[in-house]
Image 1 (cartoon, rainbow, N blue to C red):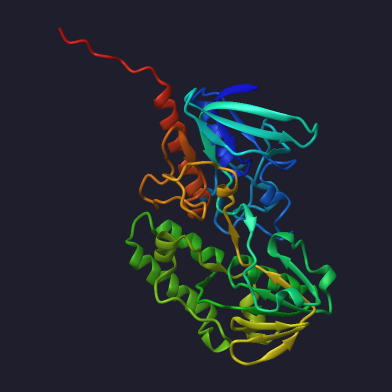
Image 2 (tube, helix red, strand yellow):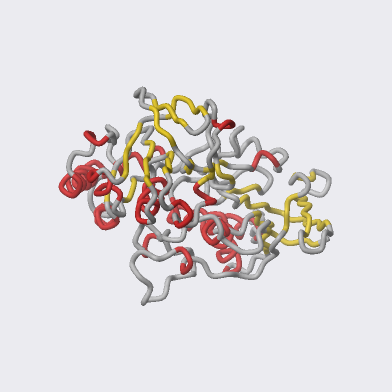
Length: 379
């Protein structure tokens, strides 16, 4: 049994950032992580060529600046540096608030020793984030597909797919970049673009982030879209539709990021990557699309996002989390704070900048709660 002020569940960027902020304020804390490394989504479940899509100045975690010689867009392996904590701890029982002792109780199984460990804390920070588990949607006939089916989190590179017909489902950042990588490895690549997306470049987004400091979001969106159109032209004729709202407006309102083009658009225009609408059904290796076309594929890569797993292990916390394991409140509301010392970090859909702000807000709030209050006595 061990007791600390704060128990942080999850050793990704959110957990690392929160721990760093608490350490600076001299608040005792422990980070519990189920994998054998920190930031496992980056280190173990991301494709080889991944790098940060935003310039490094917008992606630094609190009190952990990048080296001055780091590239503007940092590769995944250079993003996170380890810290001291408890690795290979699987939540074997529910996390719950014990009213009898006014503390949180967390029981984990040490996957190295097989021993169950119990932790008590005044506060719990849920730092497992929105991207805890890969999501594959229900598709009619998918269970009978005779080829290979993987989620983007299982994709490293396209070497094993050379010469094969591969369908990437999803036209966000992962989907587009994986399609580009597959094509470079010699795969006959197609992509499903089920919903409208903004296609920008890293530098356009970098310019937009800078301009947002001085100009209204509507003007920045207009500039970004003009630059995007100048760079890519009209992509609708190739099967990719654009949203009616601007890219930065959508990021603020929905959390959805624009797609950063790494070379996929040119391959789409040249016919090296084919674009299809949503999948209607699958029969063995034949996939039928909503436009009536049917094609044969050897493999499917689902770049269809992730989902939260909070509700599978957290008892209570319904004031903070909804039935999907996401905060009930949205930014700029106080979405990161619940009752009885329950917090969440990395659930704002605002990337690493949002994670940094969450960590600082949580650490300051906890530190304030632990600071003895001065009581004025009136005579």
